[in-house]
Amino acid sequence: MSLKLKYSKFSLEAGTDEAGRGCLSGPVVAAAVILPKNFKHPLLNDSKKLSEKQRRELRPYIEKHALSFGVGIVDEKTIDKINILQASLLAMHKSIDRLEQLPEFIVVDGNKFNSYRDIPHETIVKGDGKYLNIAAASVLAKTYRDEIMEKLDEEFPCYNWKQNKGYPTKAHRKAIAENGSCKYHRKTFRLLSEEQ
Image (cartoon, rainbow, N blue to C red; front, side, top):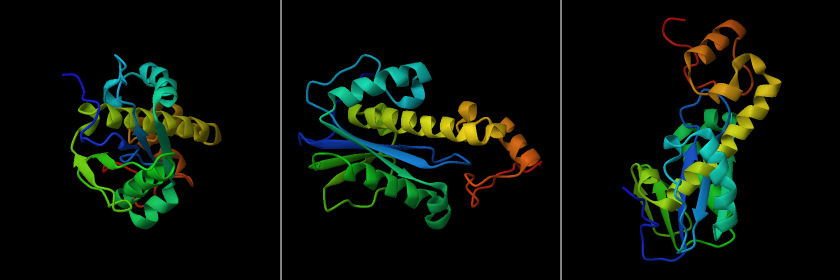
């Protein structure tokens, strides 16, 4: 099924999505994207359905052709303070703040959103597989977050973040069990599995 460009009749519709919600470490990163009406790319889809190589290829194309895009980052300390849902919504707001044009309408991947400056919005479950502007936001959010995790990996190579990007893999949890957690881990998350 091919993705629709956007949800509403407004020409300045921003799609927004986040990456890193389920991770044990690092920030949550969101992106917002406003696409032009003739935008298309054969690869663009929900970032989870794309390979890392495809996402890296798409990012400069999206950044070059979007009418506007913004990226918002909320670190692990804030996540621990306000909880992951609120941190994800905050990251989305920050990404919309960075758009060069104020959107007339906002479409959000998922089922929760806090109203932004009284701009009308719609939440869409699995929206990144339905609308190109949300899919584009999902690609930017994921690639920007992956880069951050690769950088943090240089500081703490024992957790292998360049590979697992902070997600709760068996190897990541084993590394936490062996080395303890570090300053980039989300302390309010269950870092170890039941058996450890």
